[in-house]
Amino acid sequence: MVRPATVRSRVTLPIRLGEVETVAEVVTFNGLVDGLEHLAIVLGQPGAEPGDVPLVRLHSECLTGDVLGSCRCDCGPQLHEAVDRVEAAGGYLLYLRQEGRGIGLYAKLDAYLLQDDGLDTYDANLALGYAADARDYTAAAQMLAALGVDRLALLSNNPDKAAQLANHGLEVVERVPTAVHLTSSNRRYLTAKAHRGSHALELGA
Image (tube, rainbow, N blue to C red):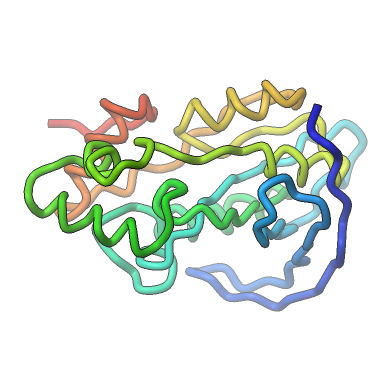
């Protein structure tokens, strides 16, 4: 049984990301199992009506995609989409410090070098001695519980996120697919996510 986390602070933050300009609430936590500084970003009005199920996005940090606009992945566009959709529906964006599917920034860049030599994104991680996907969502489950969320709609194409949250006692009442942000630069990456990670992605021919 994982110990509960508690809310540490709530900070009002005007934000502008993509086409969305709004005022969000950023929540920090004590007692997260991995000791990392994950954030919950409250968007819109979750729980405005009794029985409302909040829309939740678990977004793993990607400095290259989120900040630098890298086209090698779909992380930046997914983050912009998530802010837009969660703001409209009311819910939570959990920004998780899990760079490179949990292997860290430098290791992710090392994996890029191996991808340039022909390995896919999963085999590159394995070649460096890491798990293909090292992410653990226990802290995310702690965060949601601390926010009083036990039922949610999950904005994700990744079945592992829903499965891990369910294993921690959260009810994922719906898995809401994200858009497919396909470009010529990330086709190989998204193909690997679909075939190796079982992500629900329709990539076409």
